[in-house]
Length: 117
Image (tube, rainbow, N blue to C red; front, side, top):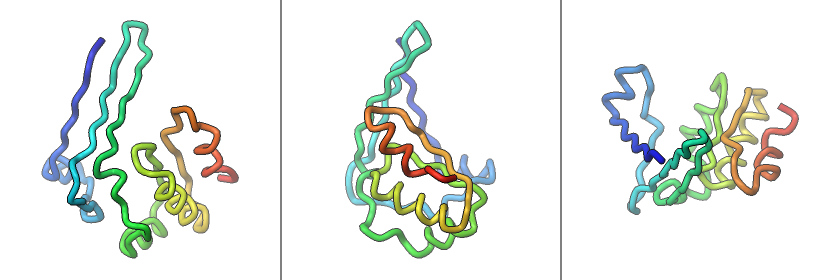
């Protein structure tokens, strides 16, 4: 079994032309994800939500504006379903292509977010 830990700084992101100007912070502990790789190649992911579950009730206007002009949107299961649903609705309203991390026990519910795309 292998355990992987990845930490990416703002400088590293920018050096690869990935902007972080829409990133936010929360006054709560950071979340963590542990990926356990089995010798068979299968993996298990343990998620401790932390800041990823501290989104405001309403998406920031700057994020909504960026989503409206995005070429593609990727939804992540580490963020709450309410946030993913709000993002998916904006993306669908302007006909953007979407994809998502769709693992887990509620897979069908999550896949309904991207129906019709």
